[in-house]
Image 1 (cartoon, rainbow, N blue to C red):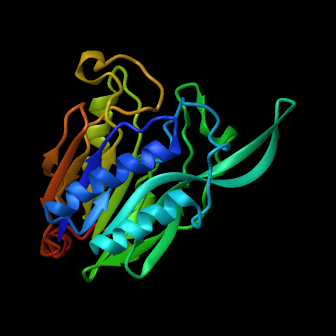
Image 2 (cartoon, rainbow, N blue to C red):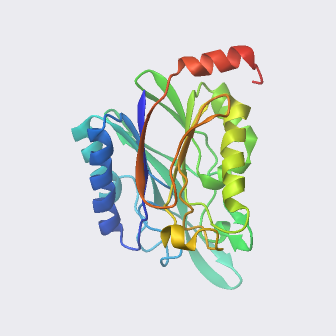
Length: 267
């Protein structure tokens, strides 16, 4: 199965972000990718204003725009977006929370996975503005079962093992990872560890680092560190991007999963 990873930098405007996503999806599809994964927050970047003001359901213009394009190209697209969720009170304020969703769309499929583990760490509280999800999601592409996780989920090995037990041979991970001391080291370690935990292919699509290589290593909010990657079921890194916007196209062999699970039956 040929996959494409679109590493980009989304901005504050959902209309402009949709146009950017479409352009890059076309490029990845033109290189033969059948499953194309975009980052978390592809519809609107973190730290660019209130997420609830542009949040849309799966029948909104962002999701349907990607569905129409995926149908035209005959590909399956996974892309991060935000959906209206609920209203909560926090410190005397009324907050309209969203769901942090990975849209999965293409011929015969149009659904969303809502991020289960919100990023309440490093002095950041995603749960104040994002309602945690509760359900695992898998889907099929060319006879291969694909599981979905989002960013901070990657610190929770049980979710990846559960996806593998549900049949996932590939797990896609849209991400908007924070930069800072040891953050790239952690990212590389965690993606390899989750591949080994689940004996699955990990396809992680991250936001490019705002400011690129020049600001690499400096602390930031969860706006991207780049380094999208493909990790095989034995933990070997097969492809990795840098800090800048980039597209990766890579062939995955599902037989490698069967081989790994036979020799390393951790599940």
